[in-house]
Image (cartoon, rainbow, N blue to C red; front, side, top):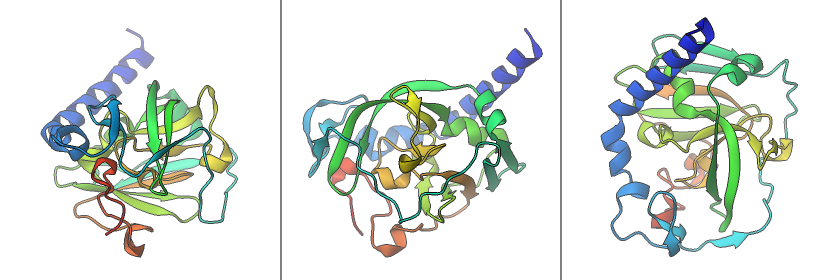
Length: 231
């Protein structure tokens, strides 16, 4: 096994150990454990009705932001992982692209009542990135930050799910700037505002702290199959 292969295997092993710590909580999360979830259609990839309540399917991807669309050259881009970690880590674009990449199909549910179905995403599992820094045992939540000043919070058991990615490609093409390119987070089992566009920092927290929309009256938990939009 080459040195690069050994490094990749160490990253995969660290991710698996981290996920195992939270596996019971992941299995008990609403989008996996609710016995009578709301919604319509056949079961989706994780057992919930394909279309959450109050949603309609959109054939296009509407553009929503805070009124700022930062333009970040790849040579200037970075992602910092800090907070309740063993060692803070800052990745540049080349280091991010050197991490194990995945491609998967997932849906995208916006709190404004539209759902973009069956997109193909390519990127790095969120769990891989935070595993690089070594998540401390008392970490419970995540706060993510973006180049436009946006923030949003996520429980660790939600953030560590296999379909939560830091994505750089959508349907085979580089993620457009309008939608958070070069890199954004997606949270297919939560409403989409929980996935920051233009992400540049991940802070591990030992207690929950609300982000931009959460302090403005949006739900702190954001479960689509509970119609959990506002606090």
